[in-house]
Length: 360
Image 1 (tube, rainbow, N blue to C red):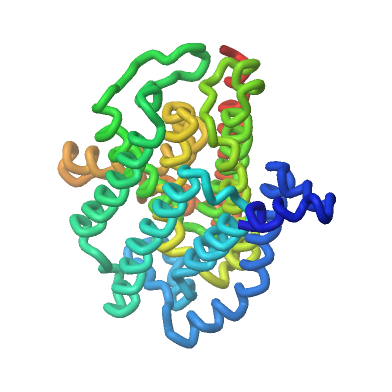
Image 2: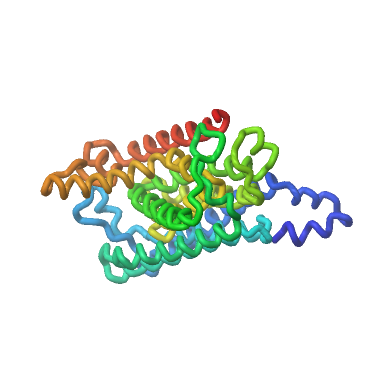
């Protein structure tokens, strides 16, 4: 919005020409989102406490988590709100990808907020039923994927692999169900990972830094040609979006670091996971996201393996508790150490993923 408002004034005040530059707007989008979260965080946390929007802790979870009961949740609305404001201010509002991503962000936030609210009001861990939540996620994902399908054109259905220069498969119309399942899966993967203070926020920061690089180079024809990756017209503008998420998550981590003053809840985790999935569809890095978000994959995979093994072994457990971070906690590793080690692992995955850009 600022870009459209100020560029016509360049003939009268030439320094406003800086608003043409994507790097300038993306950087200040990050600063804007961070400041919104940092400045309004304390008042939002106080308000959540006043409304008694406290977290319900599973009695069958790690005993060290019992003292977290009552910690304000739904803090994700702070992240999502700051990102939405920052994006509208700094991004090119004529870019269709902007509105598709904003819709995904806000729609997943609505699902998560409803789930959080019901858990709080019922004073237990039962929010939306699994069927209700999954159906809502599928519906939002379908709307988003259909929008991308019609906006992106026929080449959008191509699937690329790391280390491979050209696409390996054109899914055609089957890209739609693939995208729906993929976005829904990533929404749930981040949601499952959000179980320790600062864990999900820190891992999203790492992943979104990688995606900031990907959106920027994918949106520049010269860089895309040099790196032999698909050029996606308009994708570069999404760097404003990704850096807005970066700034918001850094600001949120100030309050979410151990011991957490607030949790993001489903309102934040479902949204951030869904957006990661959508971003991967836009820049044609669906497969690479599995490496960028390797920790999220391990967390979701641990839950799936636990369930399958439990059923096949008639009651035995593969892990002491799933998701994986709880297994390490119950193995005697302090929560803060598990979080930092997972952050490090996430950083390694992101570096490995970005290294594939030049090996094609």
